[in-house]
Amino acid sequence: MCSSSRSLKKLLLIDDNPTAQEMLSRMVVRFADGPWELDWADTYVSGLKMLMTGKYAVCLLDYRLDDGKDGLALLKEARSLGNTTPVVFLTAETDPALDEAALQAGAMDFLVKSEFTPRMLARSVRYARKLGDTLSQLRQLATHDQLTGLKNRREFERLLADEWQRCARFQRAFALVVCDIDHFKKVNDTYGHAAGDIVLRHVASLLGGQLRTVDHLARVGGEEFAIIMVETNRDEAVQTIQRLLVLLAESPCALPGVPEPLAVTLSAGIAMMPDDADTTGELFEAADKALYTAKRTGRNRLITASARNAVKP
Image 1 (cartoon, rainbow, N blue to C red):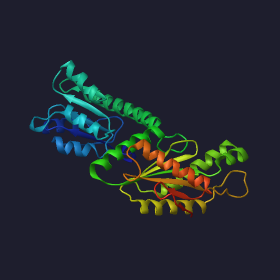
Image 2: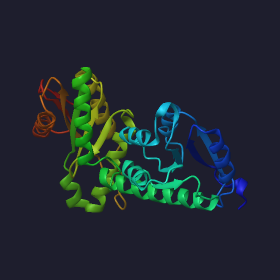
Image 3: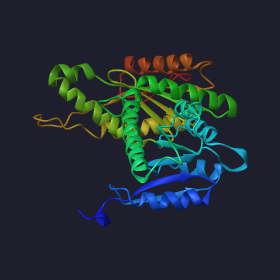
């Protein structure tokens, strides 16, 4: 396959020296696994902004930046903002302590400008990409449920704590929804656990496809899901979940070898921050109690924590 037909890969260089940009641009086009393109940011602020777009395979970050700022500070700030782009640290200095500081701040590799060659730079970029991919896979395993692809309970609890703090600071309400697949044990007992897995993925896909991108959806138990609906009042949360319950009830799940699609319904409980609780634990407990009220009073419905009134689809 000719190089022109291969996918273009992009590097970001953050360096206030135009000479460095010219030199690295000449090196990059010689990478054997190209074609590569080098974008350049010559200030701390513009570099951080470009880095956080997430569109670069690797970032080459110089130690000395504009206005007395340095790459270590940028690297730490980017990490605090959730940066996942692999970074190779560049410097004209040979201090081993700086090498260690860069790696501690999150750099994947460290190169001294006066010493590296195009081949060394290409190797460092390959290494950073590979290590970045490995770390990304590990983050995915640590924060997501393997069966459904949704966030797992540990990640959900972290997001819930973050949203609680944001709500307390800015006085913006949010809804916590806990929902449970009705009669799920019967699905496993009748059709087997493989069928149960299909039902779980079916529900996860439907819920994920209907929620806003700013909301957070997780699988927090066997057949239990939870949703954080940010900047949402109780009426809006009720309307959204009621619509989801109707949609799910109208979207039966096809199972291999089963002639008729299986009807699947959910029961749900809603609790509001700050109306229904003073801590994240109390909020989850309030939503969970509302869920079990929905289960006891007939399933396929939602209950709000304060009103305790059922809303059937």
